[in-house]
Image (cartoon, rainbow, N blue to C red; front, side):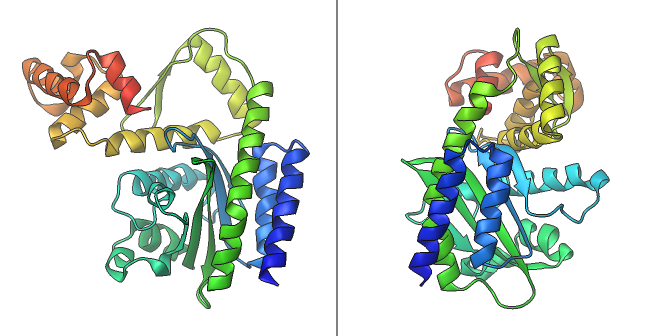
Length: 297
């Protein structure tokens, strides 16, 4: 019976993709398909860049009960926990597994009790159980998703198998939706360059970037901010040696010149140059521009 349910869900999701749905509508409809067989209280899906795993859009089953004024802070903390913390079942970790799906109850207890995502972000909202998956097809991840339950029964093995059975179809559908969006989305005229602060705040943008971002914001409010938080969180997690070298890299990502970096970190400009030289050698680059490109790749 569960095999039949999985097959029906795969057909439904494939038909959505064939109909040319955009990613937000696709994910909202796919969550409804999953909810039909695997009840949950909240769920979210995100498209990701296959090369970097940066989240490029997020679709929620319901608005998160954190208030509009706190949502950006909430998403920033989520991005930090996902990309920089020692979290159980991160999407990057799931992607390395033969079956990229897991319940939080599958994680070692010592990891679950230390989880920022579970204990500081989900449980205060009443969510006790989590089931998440990476949407992988042809060796590439095109999206990720999580569903949550309140106190009560955990997700069963059958329900885990069901979501696992539709994950590859979700990946293929995401790939199709993204490719359609790339053909019809707003095109920028000129270089699109933005500078972000240490916490993901937008600090500066070229004229072309500002115009393009205005169109993106009108079409999908908040989407770029969520992507920027993901990029900055990944930059925080870059394994670049010492803590001070990572601090210097984050300052470089913010576009700060040597004098400003020295002032912010209470070190001399000469020491800043020494740290950058060490980082360049470790990463295999020869300039700040190349370093930035490597950090966000």
